[in-house]
Image 1 (cartoon, rainbow, N blue to C red):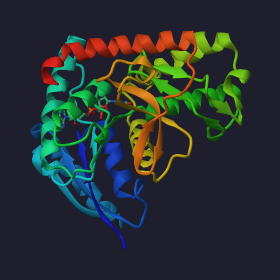
Image 2 (cartoon, rainbow, N blue to C red):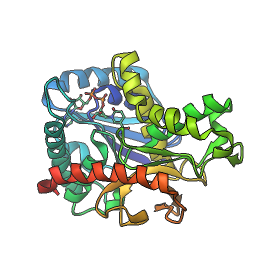
Image 3 (cartoon, rainbow, N blue to C red):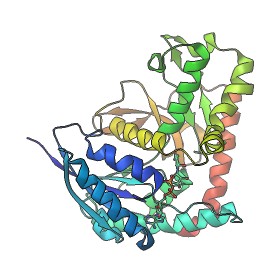
Length: 325
Ligand code: NAX
């Protein structure tokens, strides 16, 4: 029997939101059997655009789309939500300090977290991309006191995909032959894209990759990929971010991905010596409807120093918004 699934998207009239809603309506996450109801949340000033998006959704005549609600009230958007994509965040404006952005966005995620806890389904899966996404995830899950921390993940799949595409081009192999890459840490330029446990065509990736290229080219390429896209496109990644959001949710729901691990930002409980109560990107496996951190890998000294750099950045971010936790 087909199911009816409620999906809420915050910042739905934003660039990622626009790329995401049509793919969800088309069944790209749950297939063609189930029906999705979309709850699109925006700030009051963006409601006009959201109305236009609703008209476009109507004009697509998707067979997998149920009802569409557009709203500026989080209680309406999150009511009985089964899945939530949190893309809604303020952009960094000219002259704005990074810490001001951190504060402003953390307030949004604290408030959305509180509402989610009160009105969403208790099994809701909440994927957070609005930046700074790790710390926003920490804020949201800390304020959603009625939910478990395992209801929340921060998006890292775009970084995983960037890493695979760079290795694929460098080694001249299809990206589908690259497995078990790990993104550690923060979704920022301190992330560490670790290939020490990865395989390319079943062989250890590091046997095919020169150490010099790894340190001097590959790591900065992955860390700066978002900025490079902005330089060329004149705007930040949107289609690839929407695609990554669907892939991460698919893996989380067990409807895709593989038996191998992917990376997601989840609440640390001290794995690999990472401070607990940070939302940190770890390798995770999906089993029996749950995510498990892969917690038994050997980490070399260089990798550990890179991981610790990202941890330090997240601790600083957490210190700045600790009044909201
Ligand atoms: P846009 O600025 O195009 O869209 C953001 C939307 O959020 C706007 O329409 C705005 O009105 C809405 N919004 C703001 N406050 C809101 C609130 N309180 N409730 C509901 N909606 C609200 O940004 P876009 O390019 O769509 O990116 C969205 C977020 O994703 C940004 O924070 C961006 O930095 C972040 N990203 C995160 C990535 C990740 O991998 N974690 C990668 C892509 C992206 O850069």
